[in-house]
Image: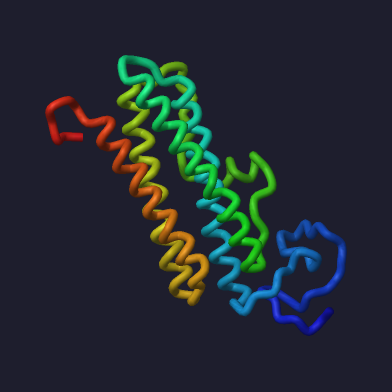
Length: 189
């Protein structure tokens, strides 16, 4: 099987795990991207993936613990949003693998890579929940734009296209959270 161009080296058979952090030859997916591009794009996508898991769990946490007069609306909206966030995780991870990189393997690795802060408070007022999630979604959209630029810089249209869809979905969540958290009778946030 040697002779196939991959993101890192010729495809070959070897032991499955490589403790040096390099891709095991058994997982070395063929790619026409240079190894440095695979490494940079994979790292960017893995951070987005860690943030997607962190935001998913935070959104579920708030879905489970929301209270107050708008309970039903917020509860349903947060459930829909958490489902949409979770739906991105497999696509992000599989994109890393398609490029020839490796992706997350554990909760510990997510904790090391995530940039979204956890919220472990015993009680969070509903409006504060929505505002926090709105800011987190804005943060993720900005990170996706940076990853998109990186993909563009390396002519990785597959990653760029995937991120364009996810940016639009993230902006939609941000918009809904903003509208749901506005003060009554005011355009102020």
